[in-house]
Length: 116
Image (cartoon, rainbow, N blue to C red; front, side, top):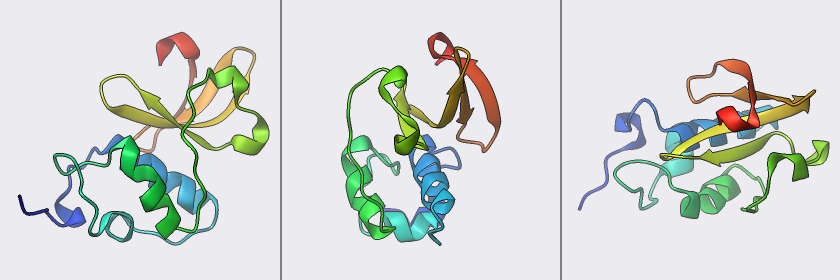
């Protein structure tokens, strides 16, 4: 099946948006297109198995780990959190049981771990 160009990707590809945010927060000049060009996207969306390849294009090192948010220290932040129903967000920090996150639409909010 032919791949659609990244410019035609769904406007809400949470994992791709999270990766773009993290790359830019590290000073990398990236576009959605540069991260996804030629990758075998699933239903025109980024999937966890492609994150490492896309991140390498931005000059980032990645590692997928399964752990609670309390295990992520400041050096690991910002970190992409994989959520239920193919959602993702970026964890910026934790304070008093709340987490500061950036949602796929770019909104920064404070939530509890249970809310994710």
